[in-house]
Image (cartoon, rainbow, N blue to C red; front, side):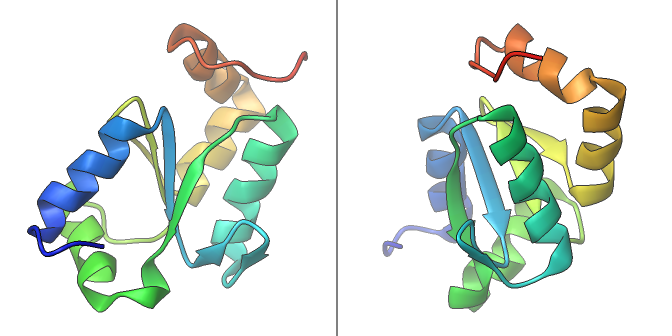
Amino acid sequence: MTDQPIADWIKDQVTANDVTLFMKGNPQFPQCGFSSVVCQILDYLQVPFASHNVLENEDLRNGIKEYSDWPTIPQLYVKGEFVGGCDILKEMFEAGELRQLFEEKGIQVAAA
């Protein structure tokens, strides 16, 4: 993290990476079930992603909720665009819409 305003730092992160996940914990050790589910979905699709642990910084934890105007964590961004949290991503994954979104955005996914 830097001295820049948190919203600017978040914007830099979501635009610098094709897929960015703000979560509790990290992909190797998620610290909530919802974050774990999203990591499992991304791992299943073999989508590389950047992750940020909101538990390490209170400004980030509150700032990401303001940035997206979404009250819960985790939050997934694809090509700078907020996609959703756990429930939305799970529904999109089950309907095949998440794979389609990644493909439409030019992000490599595992073969179906």
